[in-house]
Image 1 (cartoon, helix red, strand yellow):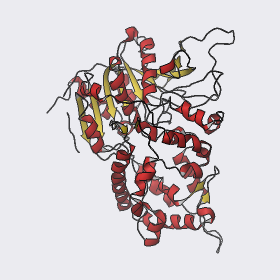
Image 2 (tube, one colour; image 1 turned 180 degrees about the vertical axis):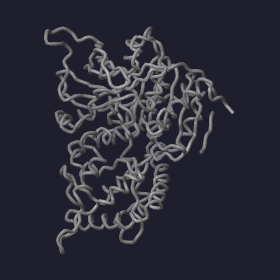
Image 3 (tube, helix red, strand yellow; image 1 turned 90 degrees about the vertical axis):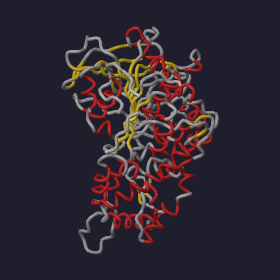
Image 4 (cartoon, one colour; image 1 turned 135 degrees about the vertical axis):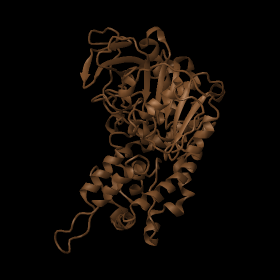
Length: 511
């Protein structure tokens, strides 16, 4: 196991805060659902979510809605929970004219500590566009945090859905609207809440997982006055000027090839199974088979299973067991071979764009500062097509390689849930005037204690790029390990959280 620590800083207890958000827009704009504080799983956080129906700025009596409304305490095993709602601007650069959205936050504490003064932790989950799991009991890192801290966690965040987004008829208006759902807006939302929620507006601790860590670095760049300390798990972004997506995907393709090699070494029997599926799909009418939702599964769509299957702790096993049931049994001699409904439904559950399209639509924009992405993953893949051409690999008897965390333009033709947003996503891919997400000068002069768990074989956040960024954040301490994959915060229970806290409070000094 690799472990590297890099200068100690003192920190205090924290209150875990996982934000999930409901959003609304004024009657002058088309309503829309999306998620700014979501997670993503996978990699990147959102704080806002727009709901299908607009939430008015006033109640039924015509009175203006307050900026902050809190509910009553309620319980799940081992925890007490309290829901909060805040009315915040959609566009912080134009506050007066901006419509308002409603952000939802759930406060979580250990039983009996409801009234005790405790520090706050803001938890930023990965994404963008995936909801955080709802707390059902005290467990994992949250249990560890609740020993000392007041936790605020995910609640009723509603992802931007295909049906709700179609209420905005213009692709350009939809694209413009979605520009308000990146890390800069997430940090503005967090600061809006902090100064209204935390006693005396004191700084709070931030825990950022995956894309949530990206948001944490944006926070360090533009609002360090709101931070007491920052914990990052699998989430240190590239911070160069322009669009860094090309460098991300070039580095990630190398790791993806390595993960494929490890998968087939573990399950060599799957080489032939995957080859047979690819051949079957390629020879089917239209180059694929219909999916239950109305989309189509093609050979390149099959490769997308690598996103979930190759990068998490139990992903190899889950992918293998999925391929075990790829084919329907032949009950009557001579019946045609066909892919099982179990396999097709499981595939769609893994992809899940029908409930979380924001992940695909905004994926490459999270790397953009003053430059467009121009479908970066698609362009970089072309340089590796000799290895990733699934049909050619199957014909030549080579293992078919899966892809990783990448979004391609053809998905907006083959995935039914994404088809209505093809034009808006194209506009976002071409957009050049993205505002900055990081301030390198501020990071080099950082005074906020920062500790980061860096996963040596992380398929989503490349180790080499992480080291480059970390070298530009003053005072950051790194724990580099191959004991965990990208999902270490979830898989390690309280161990990852406790280790990072120890790095900052002096329990794990430099050595």
